[in-house]
Image (cartoon, rainbow over all chains, first blue to last red; front, side, top):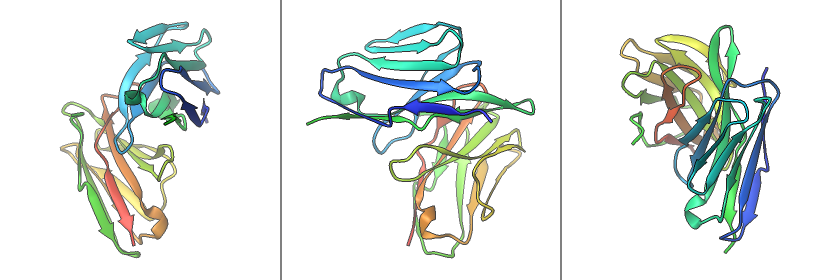
Length: 113
Length: 112
C-alpha cells in the first residue's frame, strides 16, 4: 500500500532559526494535508494542497506540493516558541473506492533553550 | 473547538479489564476514524467508519473493536487490556476520505 515518509523525525532549532519538514509519498497524491499537534494537544488541520507545484503561505509558514504530487514540504521562517509541536503530513489513499488518510510519522520541532 | 467530542478524557484501569471510549463526530461528518498515539509516537490508524459501515482497518488488535451507530457516534472497545495499551486514543471525523480530519481532544488511557 501507499506509504508516506516524513523527515526528519526531530529538529532542534534556536528561536529565530528556520525549520523545514519534508514528506514523500510512494504514489501520486490527490492532495496533501498538514497538521500541527502542540505538546499535550490533538492534531489540528493547517492546510490542504491540491494542485501540482502549489505553494501556499500562512504568515511565517510556507507549504509546497511537488510537481509530481508525490512530495511536499513545510517551511517555517524565524521560528517562535509558539511553533513548538509535531507537524504531520497526510495524504489520501484509495482502497476499494474508499479513501483513508495515510499519515507521515511527524517531525517534532524543538526550540533549544 | 473542533466539534468532535470524546469521552472520557482520562481513564485508568487495570490489566485484563475492558473499557469503552466514545466519540461524537462533528455535525454533518459521516466518517469517523480512531487512532492510537503512544508516548511521543506518531498516529497509528486503527479503524474507519463511514455512515455506519466499517470502511478500513489499520493496525487494530483483535482485542479491540469498534462500531458506528445510526446517530453517527462511535465507540471503541478495548478488552483484555495490557500495560502496552496505555496511550492516547484519538477520534477524528471528516466529511469523506479526502477531506481534512477534525480531531477530538483524545482519551488518555492508563493501564496499571
